[in-house]
Image (cartoon, rainbow, N blue to C red):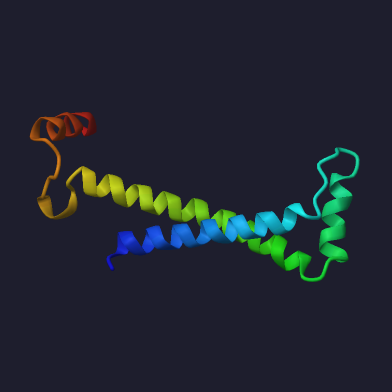
Amino acid sequence: MNRTSLIGFLLFLSFIIQFITGVLLSFYYNDLASIAFYSVILLIMDVRIGWFVRVLHIIGATLFMFLLLLHSVRGYYRVLGINNGECPMDPNTRIIYQLKED
């Protein structure tokens, strides 16, 4: 398994964590403007391990965005052929990309 596949797998795993914690949080969250804040306070104070699920959801969102950035940069790095001088692109397209960089 190479690094790109590992980053993709971690990205998928963080998405699954986001989905599960999001479903768990949705059981207690109320979206009415007058009581939305109090539903979050209820989740943190009164629900067993509610604070942990909320923190896991927050950290999972940050991790998801960071891994998405890494995965995208790695993909662009490979497409542009910067890796070991090899170019999987059409030579004419690569010339256009090189002219844009200058």
